[in-house]
Length: 231
Image (spheres, rainbow, N blue to C red):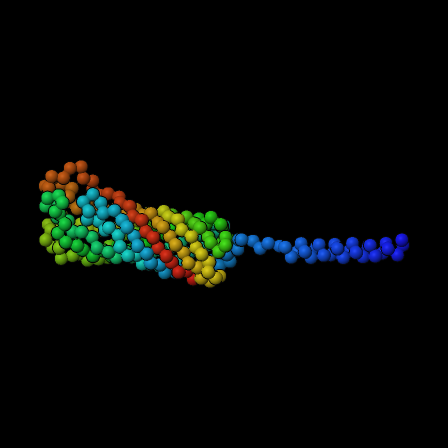
């Protein structure tokens, strides 16, 4: 009986060691990964669709190209700056012609926007399976760099639409996919607002228009993909 007792103690000790090692081997890796890099920059491409306003002389949208830079602030909050250019065409409208027959040509659009946005990340300073969804909102300025078209020379000066400069507001959703620690792919869907100034010829009574505001807000929706480099 005495000879069996030490053997029992040794067996119990070995069993406890086996259970500890087995528990350690069953550790499940977390789906969350900390994001260490604090800055990022990249180039994006996409498309924007926009409302043209009451009379249809505003830019309807087009191909969108640009660059963005971002820096992480604290927790889920970060700040980014974006420069984008939308290239497309818009209708040249003659207000003196009958409704339905006012388009007399097309003009180039090179709508450039410069804005700053705050980004709120759903997963904070971590990613979930490499994904990091976010919401952005901000504002800046929009202006058209395209020159006058040949069709506009047929209009009276007070009938010519000029985009000028306008406030540019944004609200959007997106996500980043961290391919590596240094490279990420990003997609954005952004709702935007800007203002169209009404040419004097459209706002007067010469052509029989009534209740025409001096300017109007129009909406736009853009979809972009960005290749980001992080450090």
